[in-house]
Length: 423
Image (cartoon, rainbow, N blue to C red; front, side, top):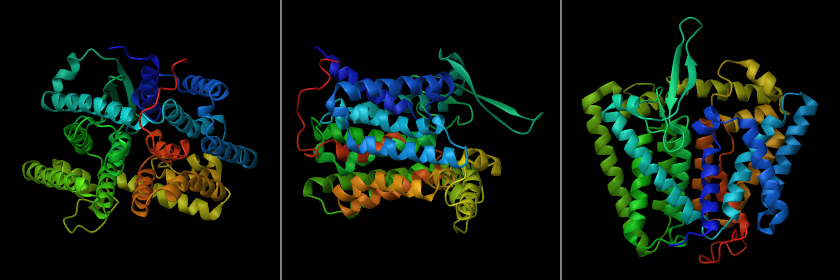
């Protein structure tokens, strides 16, 4: 079987898109500045040479972000080229991956995500059962972070960047190739979003193949043990269950219900054995209810306290400085700055006007082209993710509105010639 260069190219672009935001390779092993410049130059080359990359939606978004950065640079001096590239690179990477062949993008995206999900599940399970095997794993090792005060700090390391990353700080959680499970869940939930809402737009050879992909994504999401990931997953599933579907979708709904029941049973059994050390207690009870059995919402424990602190700090700064304060003032304000809550920290840094304009830009294609229930699911998923993560724009999320703007036909065609045959 001869594999065309265009097919390989799109798979490579999808892989590049996945590693761009907080993968261990991008953060710990590659010079981020050089990588950003290379991607920017590559995009400019494609933009000039091929018309299909000239997506007015993407260009508009880049211009809005650039204008916001320039405005903040003039006003406070607390924003610059690094901040612009951090926001622009996910958009450019997603656009390149989609536009290389928009009709095959989602099919290939699901295949890539499932491929890495299977690998991550295998590695995660092996190291969970026999953690000593990580020492025999011939992969690159690197320093990740330091925790603790000076003189009492603990140094944490990671191992592996290409296919799977084992992180000492998350030894029992599936991080995939990313720096934390909370980032990996964004990729997985975007795949779940596509599988459930756009199944009829994908080219699966059989129902069995579709069920296999759904099972892989669901199992990997559970193994991530990310509270944010669980919430996004439940949002997507709830929206899927509520919308009216044909009889062919009723079978999928039954399978999802069975998977949820099975997951709940497994979590409860594990909780009965491990108690406060269980996944159910640490990722649900501890993070959402502060470890209390009263099940009243409490975000003052674990990572929730830092996120809540950032949210409150951002709200205070926004009311005081609605035009934005820049990164220098923002980062100097508190120790928990930029821990999470990017939805609000972006407004705090760049100002309410830029923040509102960027949000309108992100959400407009979904609001105008999708059904109400799907739109609500995307908005809730976006808010949940950006309140829990450090970046406002991730390739795996921004690809959804970008795709909706690529073709006026919107999923009307599935089988076309690949576009990068000459590239």
